[in-house]
Structure formats: C-alpha cells, structure tokens
Image (cartoon, rainbow over all chains, first blue to last red; front, side, top):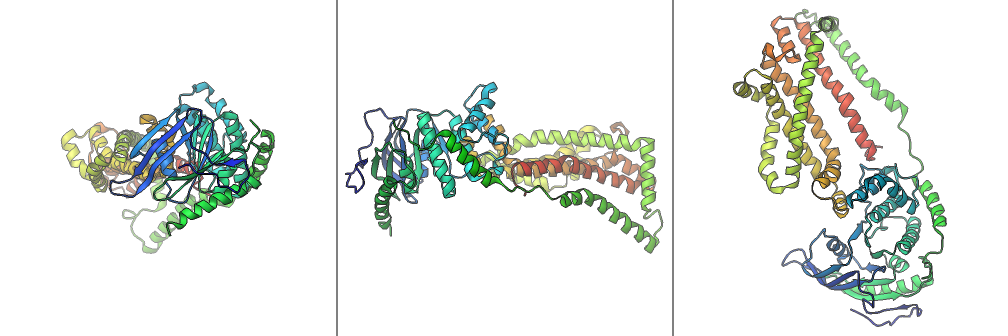
Length: 265
Length: 290
C-alpha cells in the first residue's frame, strides 16, 4: 500500500510507509467488511495505523467505505475480519448536525460530560469552557435550531471534546457548510488539534480539505474500499485552503482519484 | 513544533463572532394578529354556536322539553353550580379521569418502550394493542361490572383499557419516527440501558409520543363518562356521568344538555391548559414551528 513519491510537488511532501517509530494509538490490520456473506466487499484488507497526536485524512469517492470504517471503529457496526487495536477510546463527529434538538447547546455538551461520569457539580462550568473554546461563549442557552450550521458543528466539536477521548473520528463534518464557514472551522479545528494533542482521523471526499488539514492524506479506492496511496505532508508552515502546497498536492491526489474512478466506468 | 494556524485564538474568535451574527440574524417574532386570533377563536366558536342554536329554536319553534334555549341550559348549569353538585361531580370525575390516565401512562410507557425496542415483542403484541385501541372501551363495562361489581375498580378498569393502548401505540410510533442520527449520536456518546432510554430514546420520541398521550387522555375521559353513565351506584360518589343519568331520569332536557356542555368544557379546558402549551413548547424548543 505504500507508494513512491513521484510527485511534482515541493520537497515538503513525500509519501511513506504507514506507521513509524512511535507505537500507534490506533492500529487496523487486514480489516474487511461485508454486510452479507455473499454480498459485495465494502472494505477489503485495510491496514492503517495512527501515531498519537497525528492528524490523518482519509479521502475517496463514494462507496470507499469511509463512513463504514468509522462506524466500525466506534462500535456502531461490526467488522467481518481483521483486527483493530485502539489505544484509547474514540469520539465520533457526524456530517449532519447530530445535536439533540430537545437540549440547549450547553446541555448537549453537559450530556456528553454526564455520560463519561464527569463530576456533576462541575459539568456546567466545563461545558461553558468548551463552548468558549469553539468561540461560542454566548450559546449555552440557545437551542440547536437557533444556531447556524457552522455554529452547530462547533457545538458538536465541543460535545466531542467533552468526552475527553484521545482519538477524534470525524465523518465529513464540514461537508454541509458554506465555503466561508468551512474555512473558519478548518482553522478552529487545527488550532484545537494543536492545543489538545488529539489524534484525528478525518474522513472527507474533499481532497483540498484533506490536504488543508492533515499531516497525512490517505487515498482509498471504491468498491471495495482499499488504501491506494498515501502522502505525508511534512511542512509545519501554517496552511490555508488557498496555499500553493495545498493546491499542488490536491491536484496530484485528484489525478490519482480520477484514475481510480475511471476504473469503475 | 511550528504554529499550525496563522491567526491567534482571539482573531479566530472575532471572525467567528462576525460570521455567527450574519448567519443567525433575522428571527421574526410571531405575529401579534395570530396570537389575538388564537385566543379569540374559541369564544367566537361559542358565539356562533349560541346564535345558530337560538335561531334554530326561533325558526322551528320546537318545544323546550325537546330543545331548550341557550338561556335555559345556562340556568340549569348555574342551578347545579349553586347547589354545589356540579363542582363535586366535575371535580370527582376529573380526579378519577386524571388518576386513571396516570395509571395508564405508567403502564403504557414501559409497554411502549419494550415494543418500540424489541421486534419480537412488537410482532406478537402490537396487533393485539391496535385491536384494543379500535375496540370502544365501553364494551368492557358489562364485563368489568361482573368482575369488580359497581365499584371504582370497574371505572378504572374501563378507563385503563381505553387509554393504555393509545399511549403505548403512540410511544411506539414516536420511537419509529426518531431520526436515526439522534440514536446514533446517543450511542456514540456512550448512552446505554436505562440512561439511553431516559436521556435519548424518550425525549427523541416525545414529539410523536405526545399525540398518543393526548389521545390517551381523550380516551380516558370518554371511557370514564361511559363507565359512569352505565355503572351507577351511590357508593361511587358524584360524577358527571351519574349527573347526566339523573337529569335524563328527571326528563330535564336543559340539565341534560347543560351536563353535556360541562363534559365538553372539561375536555376543552384540559386540552387548552395542559396539552396545547405542552405541544407548543415542544415544537418551539425544537424549532419545528416557524
């Protein structure tokens, strides 16, 4: 699954073997998923490991099993074969806003705290603190429907952080947002990641978004979902969606993605 | 490690605040005319009813013992109110209705959750429940009298058989209507067992469940009236059903109609004072109404 760095991109980018010197916080080996015995293979022999604190993006077209993979990792679905070693519990953030509409923004965060047995008397203060971290200091008493899509996803980030997990799985969390809002959330997310040291596995079909955010971008094939190639982005420079490094590498990854998509035509 | 973002936390916050202000501007308050209309409409309905009623008597000239005038009916109601019988009857009936309804809720809730979550239980029991819901509960009165005699137990049995199926069935449909994303979110947050039921499943099912609860109350009240009208025994104390039967035996049509109006009024009041606010609050809180 490794590949050579035959890239036209700057030396800041190279492809590499998965895994490294650090022992992985998440290690997936030979993972396969079929929904029925005779049915199609959704995920085929997937191998992936994440180092603690790493930010990895998983890109692929429809049917590459990205969401299935996250569901398996969080126990919402079962795997058919292979092993998964999780060094820590994982929080999951969805594409649609999955805030509970009967609770205020603050109470949504508090529920997550309650479910991880956070001390009762400290929940409110902690929830407010987390809302401030996502720049929503005044949203505590607001209902999800009173918030914009971007604000809801920020509350969802606060709620995921409330669980205090070391791994954050994100399932196309910004896909439904407009470009301006998405740009802001990219910056917020990177800042939070940097401050918390979370390990992030970010699933998206947006190649630019993947390159904008991640340290490592993994390209998956569709039907069945397999890892085709991966790119390590070693630059520590702050990146923007407009950055040259992002557009150059996006172009290269998109070419690979198109090759894979044509195969199905 | 180098900074991964160009901007400081505060700079991002300022950008976020501006964007949020732009994205959430322009929530209109409900129109005042709509509010006025809402509170005046029931009075208007009563006025129209009285007018039609009065003119029907004026045109057809039916005798008072067949169709008394609105004034005569009002007098009958006032007379019973002054004697105190109206209050004790209405109070007693309402208390039994509420008690029966609460017991039905206590049975229907776990039943609904069990059938909402378990496919096997549902396949076996739901047809039975739906059948019971279709059956007019007044059909149970003779059986209940044989089992329990002319006692409160008979009244409650009929009320329970009337209300419980609606409540349980309403909860099952409420559970079926839950957008799956809420249940997945609950699971991912780690909600399990009773906590999952209390903090995720029931609140998520509530908008759909509420109509089942309302229907449950309506059935409880109807069943109670039917039972009171049939199972008559002084030991049961006063009640609106008994009062209706007394008025009939006396051939006092104004009193009969007056009692019917009181029974109707209790139903309307409970809807307006309990269920309508509950429904409005639910819809408003969840942004289900504009």
